[in-house]
Image 1 (cartoon, rainbow, N blue to C red):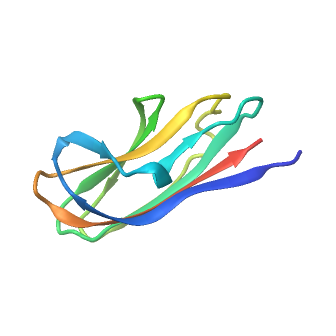
Image 2 (tube, one colour; image 1 turned 90 degrees about the vertical axis):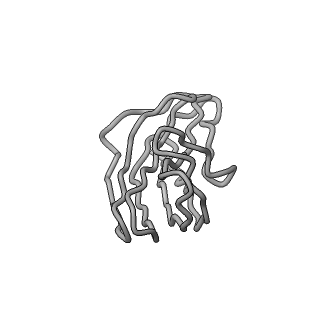
Length: 115
């Protein structure tokens, strides 16, 4: 079976809007499964530069799929491969929720494989 890896990754400065107000991290953290392809999320890795908890949220077609709390000046690595398949045309996007006014940097890497 031929597979193609895809990576949503980057270092992103942010200003929090509240833990109940997640926001998109931009186009570099957005992916649409091509027609005729199935994809699987493989892992999420993220780091938080601030002194407070933030939460990265992987959304599937606009609905939260997985939450990744990242502690103060901490990191997290979560394997995802056995979670579920992403069918053709599925849109996944990484969002961030952080306390209002909190300024910091998120380092994030989401691995996806097309099957």
